[in-house]
Image (cartoon, rainbow over all chains, first blue to last red; front, side):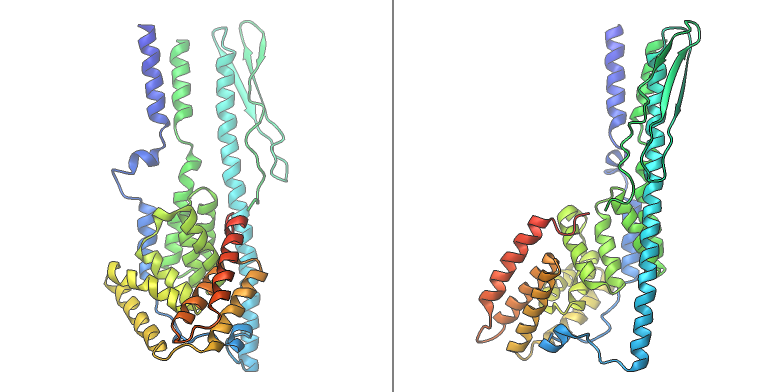
Length: 171
Length: 210
């Protein structure tokens, strides 16, 4: 009987460990891909200029002869683009840090919970876990301890902050 | 009781983390920004989605770069997308790939893609593909000059010097195709040799990988 229950639990866990995406793939289309498809189709344009083959001059030099005014406006555009690009890169870094932080927090929670189970010799166990991060984004190591309230013995859990902290900004 | 708790914890740990849903959120935000022609914003969202694990986002990053006029970057990312997410490719993305080729003056390469797009895409994009193909056809009513081919080889060499081997491959391909359009081919061997070298370097360097 016990054996059958254990086998059932294993099957349930295996079934749930299949990513949701994989399970949904056959039943419904990907909404993000559909939205992108619609957006790309809406923004599809014809080229602005007629086709012209490269010549040795145009292959080396900038394509258009510019008046002073258009040259300065082009320079301004280049500056704006550079600022936008820097800002965009900054936002990407922030977002990646955010994703990494959430993943670490979730992992630390999971480890604290398994620590609580490990220390469950008595009737109850408490698990605490914390993860601190330094400014460079590396985990400084949280800790989790499970305290046996009745036995008075403390058993350390595995929540030692070994979360895969690879640091932000890795391209 | 202990078994039940253990089972619950195992079940909870098997459930996907909320972070797993994030790439899709960024793809959706990227789609909204792209549709509203806010391409810089779309680029950020789509790059985040790609780095958070959505490999297919590379196609959309490349299309956005094309729309922003960042042609060589677009070509590099398209090459990466073909490698990391070949199954995500479709006729709309192919249209943007053809536009990137067109912007880079790679008209014969663009024409090959547009032929496919015109057959498979919806009426709007198919119509645009046909229009571009007609313009390209007019361009080749006279054969390309030796100067034209020299220019493509100059561009290819320049791309190689800057480490853009995947882009260099495209310029060598175009130079070879242009050479074939002449009654008397011009610097064909150079184009073929250059292409082989650049392709090898692109493969060795894993160009376009993050």
